[in-house]
Length: 63
Image 1 (spheres, helix red, strand yellow):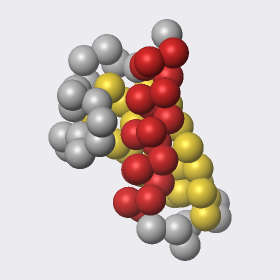
Image 2 (image 1 turned 60 degrees about the vertical axis):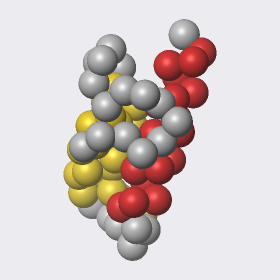
Image 3 (image 1 turned 90 degrees about the vertical axis):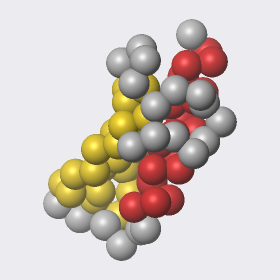
């Protein structure tokens, strides 16, 4: 998936259900840096993707 967020790189997303939680991993296509966020299964997956992309952007700028 390509990013619709503030980064110019591609972001790949992986969604996985773990019990009653949905884990969303965002991976930067250029650097391979990845972050993970989790939320309830009832949450819209697009919301988790947005939060994961924001966290990834923060981590990339930080370091």
